[in-house]
Length: 145
Image 1 (cartoon, rainbow, N blue to C red):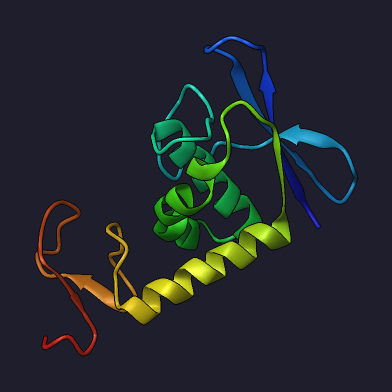
Image 2 (cartoon, rainbow, N blue to C red; image 1 turned 90 degrees about the horizontal axis):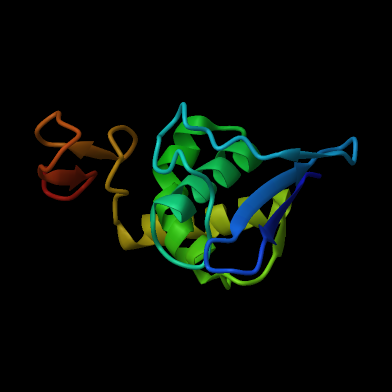
């Protein structure tokens, strides 16, 4: 089971925040930011607030833990607000792969029960009315389509 460790390096307000993944071999490696999926923050990961650095971290964590890039892209903003933004900026953190997957499943379940589409969802139960990735009406199954 993989583990993820967020480490704050430095003591000032510009301290660097690094994230490592420890795989089955027990060796730490930098977590791939997955800029190939979405480029929120090419300058690195952050946590403790809602912004581009935390969104990039949430995307990277979800993609690595789930092994499903499309699913990670659909849920990562919700994971940002529910998890990453709540970690204290000044402290290190650790999450297991199982914890990430469990929280993603909880978020997906809550969204499904609420009938709320993810704003980036373009396939699955929610379809965009205008065929566009930008602003437009979003319709759900059984919602009077």
